[in-house]
Structure formats: structure tokens, C-alpha cells
Image 1: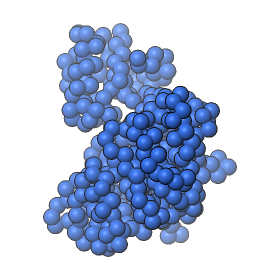
Image 2 (image 1 turned 180 degrees about the vertical axis):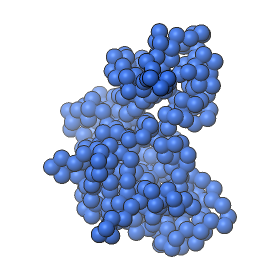
Image 3 (image 1 turned 60 degrees about the horizontal axis):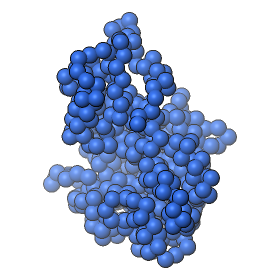
Length: 376
């Protein structure tokens, strides 16, 4: 079957094309323009372009069966009703809002333009039902919590039967504020390769199994992707079948399973997730090192209250004004990767700690981050 490109930034176009995609007659390409001769397996519904630890785009092949299984398992866990779309339809979390709506037989509520507390309140009012659901990233949730002194915003938050939050680490501060406000929060864990969130508040959805090999979490279930488009080597490396014939997805995430509850402790590779988007720190570092005065800079991830994670630049004493270098680095990163990947801070030290090999001691720098004051 041939892929049909659809603009993931146009939620109406994705919504209109989705029924034929789930019927298996019109598979969609989201986030990229497919080659005219590319073929996908029978049953493919959507291929989503995403980015991995290397910053090299991957194209995840999702079947109609996988997307539907995810939507049905979500409904079984939290209920079914009317969904509000506040995320780009070109990402799996946004796509799943549309799939869940289709499976539930309801019309999704689309938030147009820039996300804001006022837009959220108005969309909630338009929902006109008690069973309304939304999926957010932590930065959006933080925006709403910051505005919750407004009685209308707080009422709209509490009007939702469930507010799913995923795509990145959720800070304890935001989680506690949501609990204090009695907001019906559900913290989700998953990826494009699992058709979106498949672990809710640490508990796998029905049909999902989570295993641990060494420190890496692995996931099995009917919502797994078929693999990566035109990349059999990567597919074989990431998706493995055990001796019993069970297919597993290697998440690349460090985590543990304690008394049946899944705990995620970050990436095994050099990637942060900021605002729900994967960012390769290696790629950011290469761009930063192109700025005069930052040729030997080191870029690391740091916790961020609003975005989950952000990047910080470390450099030895150098020429130039740190403020000017940071602004130039942010501008270059934004131009090449996007605004979401911009470093938030630059720290100048008398010298950087080095290993015997002559390479920067990144682990020591990571420990030093805890002593660095948060960005203004």
C-alpha cells in the first residue's frame, strides 16, 4: 500500500483522513513526505515521523489494530466520552485523541491557535458533557495550574473526568499542586512505538506487559508498532521476540518495576524530553560549539519545573560575554532544531573537570548541576 501525506499541523485534515486510515484503505504519513514508491505492510494506518537519541528522524509504522487496541485499553481504564485536542495531531499523543474520539463515536473538540487558559476554559464550555477528557504535556498543565486562581479555570480543570499528562517527566511540584487543587490527573508513560501512553499512574493498561532487563524497561502488548519504515536493522534492534514468541519493545528508558508499579528514571542514552519532544543533546552540543568562544562547551540536561527537562551549557573561562554567547547559541539551536531545544542557561567555570582520557567528566558536571541555581 502507498502512503498518503497529511499535514500533522492541521487537526481537521488528520481527523477527516483517519476513518479511511483505520479501515486500512488509506494509510497516512504524518510529519514527512514519503517517497512515491514507498510501500507499507497491509493493515498500516499511520506512519509517524519522530526523532530518536541521535536526532536522526525515525518513521514509526503503526497498524490500525495497534492504534485501536490502545484507544480501547484507555477507555477500559478511564472511561469513554468526549475528547479535547490540545496537542499537535502529528504527534502520537494528539493522534490518539482523534483515534479515541473515533472509537467512542464522539466529535473531538479542537483547540485552535496558541494554548492558553482562556482557550481551555472556552473549549471545556463547548464540550457540553460531563465525561470530557484531555491529553496535555506538563508545560500546558503548568500553564493551567498557574492560572487556577481564576475560578473559571479551576472549574474547567475539575470538569474533566481525566486529564492525561505525558510526553516527559512530571515534576513533583506540579504533581503536588494538581493534587492540592483536586485535579483528576493521570500520569501516562509510552511512546510512538507503543501507540502512545500504555502505562497509567505506573500501572500497565490491560493487555500490556512491562519487563525489566538490567536497567532497561521493555514493553509488550497489542499496541506495539510494526517497526520503522524502510529500516529493518533498527526494527530488529529495537523490537525483539523472545523464546516464547512474545514481541518486546526496548524502550531505551531506565526504570524499575516495584510491586507491579512501573517507575521510570530517565533515558539510557543522551536525550532529554522537553515539552514532550525528544532532544538529542549531542546535536545541540554540536551546534553550540559553532559559537565563537564555545568551541569546547559541554551541553547537559537539567531538571526544569515547566518543561520537564532543559539543556545547560558548561564552558571553561572564555572570551566574550556569557549573555551574548548564550543568546547566540539559543538562536542557532532554534534555527536548526527548533525553539523547544534552546539551552536555558550558560555556566562559566575556571576550568572543566576532565577525565584521564582528556574528555570532559560529564558525570561530575551532572552532579554539579544540583548546585546551579535555576534559570530566571
